[in-house]
Image 1 (tube, one colour):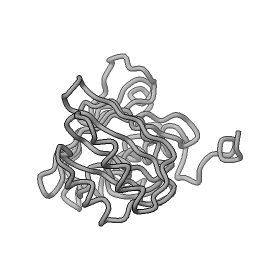
Image 2 (spheres, helix red, strand yellow; image 1 turned 30 degrees about the vertical axis):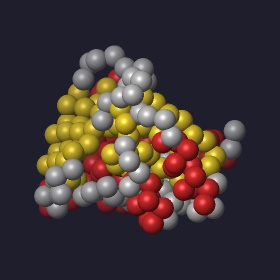
Image 3 (cartoon, helix red, strand yellow; image 1 turned 30 degrees about the horizontal axis):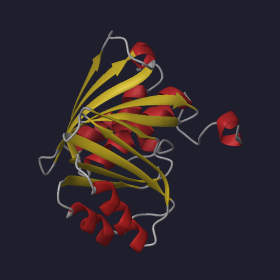
Length: 219
């Protein structure tokens, strides 16, 4: 256990799980969208749904989508700022049971027309995990440099991607691959010790069968 686990993150309160964690989920959602959101349909579940107003979960989620960190004083005015910036927000409370009590689903649309849907959970102490992107199961904590590839499952994809990274002197810490079925759609999650340069990201994106690439920096 670290000091961070005991003391918690630097944040606008009152709750590390319901406020700081929610802000980090919203911020990670914005990074995954790779665009400025103009619309966000937010559904909260479990404990999030029961206490979201009292703990500022709704404001924190919107603040993250605006690009604000958990310790940004503007968190308290996030709905007003979203309106000023032309972002439409809807929030729905769901009684559906989920695997984790602090769960949120965010459907986003960006200025360029990009549409993305994520599911995130707040684990406590400001820690989060993104568990779903556009229906794909993923595991993204926001604590490491992370590269995601969405691709068609076929032999050689992993080798091609890791070869490019090796030639670029990028060290891989962990890697996981999820697929919907054999020879169907798949997602690869690669955590690295350093950021992926834009030229390597482009080279990986140009690999045949890779549909899109997302490079994430730690929150």
